[in-house]
Image 1 (cartoon, rainbow, N blue to C red):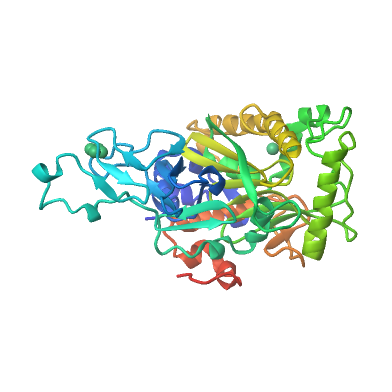
Image 2: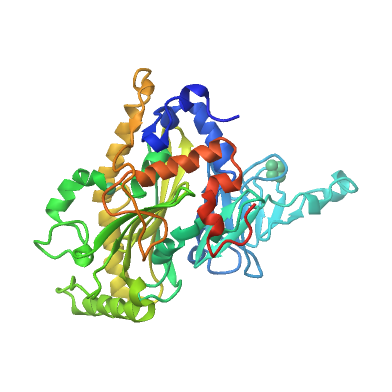
Length: 452
Ligand code: FES
Ligand code: FE
């Protein structure tokens, strides 16, 4: 069963027409939980949140609670947070350290590698009946630790994570690699969680590269909230993008990126004149990255969404955000702020303050965005409003390719990334094969190893 005919009739990403129903309809929402969130690779958390054996961090996949956990031997697992006896949450804390997850209801207990260990009155009530080995916590089908970020899927047929990511890997690397170009090495310095009354796709779509919404941020651009916080310096960020050429990149698997390519000389642009130590740190990182990556260092990440519900900022600010669905009109946002683990403490502190100024429920830029998403959701639930589709015709067919970045590239502001997102969304909702959901490009990508 695919989408209902009434929705199919007003859904045509190739022509830039998207049904409003998909943002408000409870039936569509239930189908998303069943067909999309059970198959796609989802971001669950970061290894720095569970550094020691026994550490756990309660997370979510779709609507469901999961436990991200490091077992006694140091292996990372992702379990459904639901007891095999009657389904009680076995972990009711946000994070911590334990040797056992003991269910509060009837006290079955599970080891940190998910095995059922303790069953009260086992000998009297269960001996000969209950085979403990058959009743472990339910574990995801596949899990990967990609440069510290943990991703998982419930689908045993899912292609490996890098195949799923395809050419979008280049952009995720910019979020997870060190600022000086070394691979990996990031850590989470804080997580903000909040609920907003909007459909999850509006947030995911914004980060795909909706640069057209810049007028929404006029107030923060006027006062200036950039990382250096220099008096009189307007804007939300510092100057590193000043001379860059912006590109918008779409991938058939539904990922979308707004990135930028620096000019050939890729010179460092001074931004922290008030603080010589911080200035020196960023200058050093810039030059080291250039030395390590050569011409590829010219690609300077910006925002992205990795299909379906993980978004990122790659530079300033820097972090990953999961848009967890609660209902058609409610989303729980989890923003994980990242820094280089070995950055000096004063740099981390400066970034932490900047991230809070910019993002999250109290962040001045994110407040502008959220206001748009929640009013757009609310104004689309009405009987009349739902009859009329949204327009996604911006820069239709205005795209090409680029030597630095794989994917469908546009050098002008475009809604192609959103159209690509809804093409992929439609493939999942129509129970498409993995080839249909990812598009041929990913399956041919050099990282591809095990697609259907
Ligand atoms: Fe967990 Fe009964 S529900 S022990
Ligand atoms: Fe915005």
